[in-house]
Amino acid sequence: MSPCVRVLLALCLVGYGYADSGDNSTTPNVIYDLTDEQYYAMPRLFSLDDYMSCLAPGGVYCLGSFELAAPFDHHLFQTMKGWSNNWVDNFNHTRLHRGVCVSRHCPHTGNEEPPEEWFESCVNASTISTYNISARLYQLEYCRRGITDPPPLTNNQRAFAAVFATLIALAAISTCLDLTLTDDAKKGKRFYLSHFKRIPGLDALLVNTTVVAGSDGTITTDQLS
Image 1: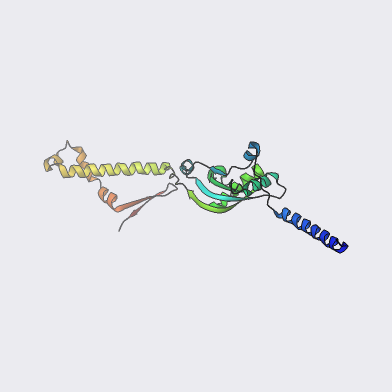
Image 2 (image 1 turned 120 degrees about the vertical axis):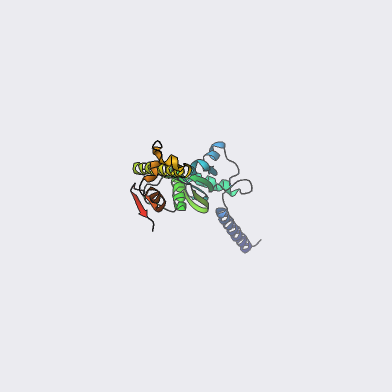
């Protein structure tokens, strides 16, 4: 074999080795086996808070999926990527699925923000503090808010309700007696309850008056025309 052919063969072998090493550098890392300790060190793939107990007191519940990210030298995240690259056998552990009662885990401390942003910041704060891995919301299923109970009545509102109920009862008794008793009974001095109907303008007051009890406990009456 001539020296020129040998040189050409040597150059071809070197070039092939260089190209082969370059292909290996771009081949994704695939992990086929993990110990229990390594597997359970990863964030849980699914996590759901109790839906009904969150909404019952007027809480906010959100459901969605998150994409994780971390620096290249983050050992746990690289393990998660290598395990997820075996997509035939494993789930993608770089995407988490969460149902979170955000009003319980991340109560508001300042201005109100949209529920989806509240949800994202809540889960992101949790993954950063626990694993030093950031989480970005990439698919929101829903955010729902429970119905809050109405505030209790103030003392002024309670007092007005009692007075108004008493007036209604007196008017009902007076009307019932006026319709059912005979003229002789109405004239009898023994039946003193018949005098209820003599309260000036009571029936008209109850029928023609609208009552508004404000949230601050103030009470106003408006005469209908």
